[in-house]
Length: 318
Ligand SMILES: Nc1ncnc2c1ncn2[C@@H]1O[C@H](COP(=O)(O)OP(=O)(O)OP(=O)(O)O)[C@@H](O)[C@H]1O
Ligand SMILES: CC(C)(CO)[C@@H](O)C(=O)NCCC(=O)O
Image (cartoon, rainbow, N blue to C red; front, side, top):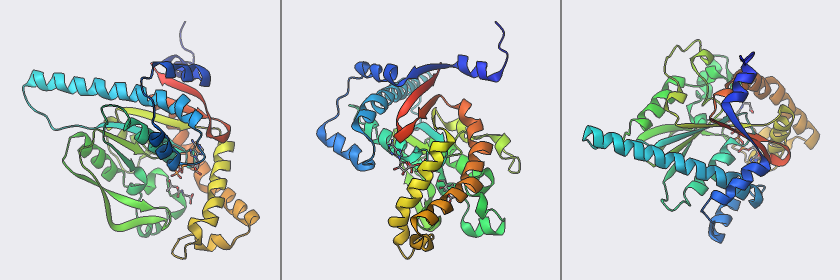
């Protein structure tokens, strides 16, 4: 039967799992986590349940581990065909999704579990936040209220960074963004030195040239991503998670007198909720609708979260 719309096209492109059927794949995962592994995972985020780790992230790490091994074997075949030793090219996993959906938490959990596999891959974690333009530049371009939108990134530098990683360069540097300073840290850089796997996390990892009409380029971040994951949730939940995180920053990070948002620490809980809600509606929610959700269907895997960050559905591209 002919496909009538893009929705059907997308449905036919993915295998769909509910939470239980995905968790059953756990039986095929020959990895048990030690007490030490579990406490390290707990240290990443105390709100994440071990049930979630075992049922969702462990099977996912197995799938990724198999893909990485298959890619390494393919590279070995290519080297033997060409009769040369090529530079080691890391396997790049991209994690996209809204602000506050849990990209960095997902990335850190996967980083920790992947490193538990017997081949102990070295896994580097990089966020595309480092490629935001510094505040000074954003101010000059009137983009301070567009942080996270395509125009707020130095996309050429980001693409060059991922291309250098994939090319197997011995050492590649990324700028570093601080949520506390709300700005790029001058003179600070993160070095990536030929790990086995790079997890690249950020709202824009699945964006393409269409999203950057003013910065014409034909090569996208996704051209260098081997496997992409989109972490998804309904906007109502995302906004709530954003507000909750803002409220916990108000009691924690914002109390630091050097914090950019120090003045928010003195807000009452109601005022702080209102402020976070407004920032969501004016910036992050708009970015989600205009620039992030449209990239979902490019992902190799979609993790759909429900209440309490529980993954309820998994879509795996065939
Ligand atoms: N699996 C999880 N279980 C429980 N809480 C979680 C989980 N993942 C994320 N969170 C919570 O949700 C909030 C957002 O998570 P996180 O900072 O990882 O999101 P993000 O997508 O990386 O955000 P940003 O784009 O702003 O950097 C945090 O308060 C975090 O503690
Ligand atoms: C740095 C980003 C864009 C992504 O992590 C986001 O956290 C952000 O700062 N958004 C701008 C609006 C806000 O302050 O939430």
